[in-house]
Length: 307
View 1 (cartoon, rainbow, N blue to C red):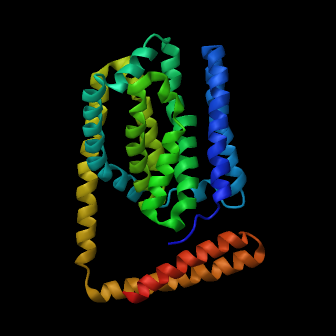
View 2: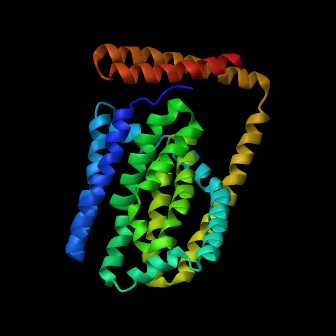
């Protein structure tokens, strides 16, 4: 089990999240229009901090915003929803019985008096800047920095750090405090999907849709939210069956074809390692990134050679 790659960078990015929240809170107390400005300022601060530490890489690709792995990423995200939506439902029911009310209802009841324009803005802001910035910061950067310490540990630690940044839950008293648990489960779900495929597009979309359910409920009622989560479950079953069928088809491939496939993959990885060395000599990638990628390629090559 390795060490965290850059613990000082992780802490700097994490603390920038709290600084951004402070800015957003101060502006939000002045007026509702200024709270919109505060949202953008609060999210841009940690996003720019991540960019500072990852600027030598191809930024968006390095954090997982790319086409490669998009469809597998979506398949794993929705397949995992079968487990995590069930777990979130059980947790929500337990919390409602414990505190006597649904925390989500408490949040919506306080926001219900806000003007319609704010809910229209909130639906868009749920994706940009909120979901994009949070996923880039906590999955695309912090989780990735934690991966050398182990995948499970990386997912749990990054999810816990993400949950703690939602200090505004405490404004709702005991019901709000229980929301840290549901947030943690949701972030573990996003982290598991990202760690499996390295693609962040699915988590950004799911995170945005989850946030936007408040606007969906305001404009079209609670039934619309129920339809959305039913759609998630249908996509979950479809993705689960798709992944099972792909696994079965790979298992049924003739051994000779599998050997040829491994040989082609090994050769491709060796060529990528040669290109990586040339990129290093030309100064296109940093020494640290060269070591990290070379270690990844070497580990994959060993797996293929072991069969």
